Length: 289
Picture 1 (cartoon, rainbow, N blue to C red):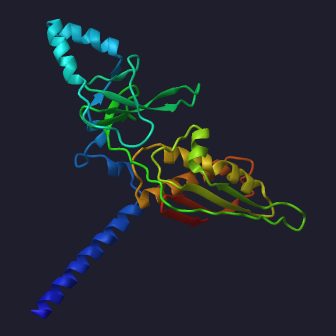
Picture 2 (cartoon, rainbow, N blue to C red):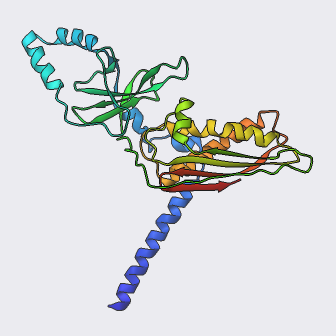
Picture 3 (cartoon, rainbow, N blue to C red):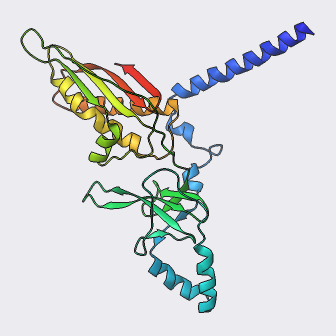
């Protein structure tokens, strides 16, 4: 019996190791376009989700008048729509006003707004139906339409104290080749730059150290001034919680975008190395390049 048990345990360990190896292989695999199409590949989940357009309360009233036979029937259906059974997850939700265009579905609606890049005016970014408990975001495939999405993350303020300091000594000729960037209040920085991070755990901070190469600080200064502009939009793009591997992927994408921008700039012949530390709640991501 002992030998059989050991053999079974060994088999389980082997299968688990095979799954891990396969997961590692798929994580680093670069898919070709022809591998992502064909009869055995399903359409994306977003394309299969139903899409909804928006309408104001006045527009909905006109539509309901055309579809409902009597005023009494409309009043009865209207009362059914106003049943509020759920509360939205996360901060900064507001009840949708009468003039706010909401998805063409019955229910009590809440809206989460963001400032637009052009003009700076707030515009709906997500909707929450308090009658059904479902969330909706803008469709990436068809502008002006909304699709159901996952539950946003309720941010947690962890009891973590962060202290930081930096010093960069000049080179022999007085040139400052090394640069440090400390964004100890990453959420405030994101809000100021119109990339809010309301669903990110706290504390949230970003620390960077850039080291100029080839006897020049041009590349280090270029990257020090721009890395956050590549990272913040990616952190701000979704309201749900990030898995560890997703944080690593976001940082990798931001580094690759910064590298592409550096290669297209006049600082491309300088270059730099850098170290990064991203703190999100109780998680700390550290990397060097």
